[in-house]
Image 1: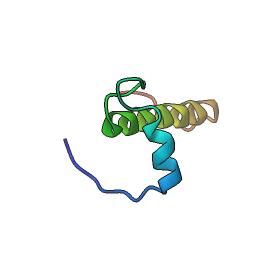
Image 2 (image 1 turned 30 degrees about the horizontal axis):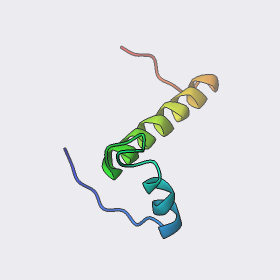
Image 3 (image 1 turned 180 degrees about the horizontal axis):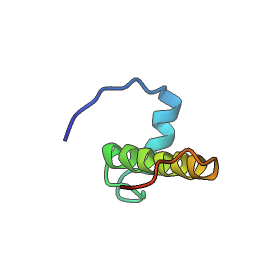
Image 4 (image 1 turned 90 degrees about the vertical axis):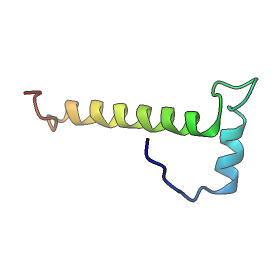
Length: 58
């Protein structure tokens, strides 16, 4: 798995941390960020499909 480095505003990171840990939905920050990226990409795919921009699977 590749590692990347990103800059995140403190207020966004604090918001993210509210959803991480024992009482949160995610085990750690990386898990939360991966899930967010997957969800965002799924939404973009849905938008592209509605606009006929997705290529058919071969």
